[in-house]
Length: 149
Image (cartoon, rainbow, N blue to C red):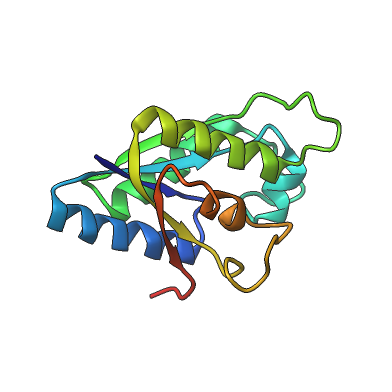
């Protein structure tokens, strides 16, 4: 089986990756760190991935995330996806990210998703978190990290 960590570069995602790595070692399971980079510059600015005046270069962001994952968990596999745009007029970048994480979780047949989020469990459906929609999926167990190390 495989453990999946949606990785956005935040301290909570880094802690989730650390915990997934420890858990994976104890159960001899692979760990995949998944970064989803929407084709949406404003989302990247909002998340602090780039400054407002910087060019939005997905390949550069992908390389930076891969380097960070490798530094934190060299034994983890890094995977990066850019979601296709949604046909739904009301879909947000969070919706696209959630859909992508679910798709990858299904492809990899993951046993547990390790999510680093401040919002899961505190707010039933936070607008800025993939934690709640992912934790509702019965395909896998969920480990929620709410405190960074």
